[in-house]
Length: 158
Ligand SMILES: Nc1nc2nc(S)n(CCO)c2c(=O)[nH]1
Image (cartoon, rainbow, N blue to C red):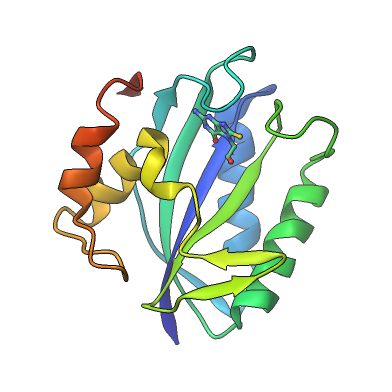
């Protein structure tokens, strides 16, 4: 069993409901145990600023699924909740990203762990730091140092 951190985000429709529904579907998988969920943040859109603000949080889970199996389960949940992949980095009903899978470092065409952009994103680092204030990433970076670097990205706890 590995301790895994997931990013959840939504910026279409009832954003809080989409996040709650995704967590519920995860909890219904008997190979996933949700241990803790960070506070939810309202966050400025990153990457493509020309879209609505998101709600984001991070969930800490324990899973016996392999990283690839977990990715597949998360994709199934996104589809079940009406995710359509129109625009890259565009609006979405729900987005589930694997941030960390234990201390593993994975680099496959369809799966990079730790998430390659997580250190650039306040909407990931802030809730992750709520759960793990002294986290050191597998490559040795300190979460508090990283948080300072993204301090200009707007977000607020709801
Ligand atoms: N604030 C914010 N900006 C984002 N840009 C992208 S892409 N995404 C989707 C996650 O990759 C988000 C997000 O979840 N939150």
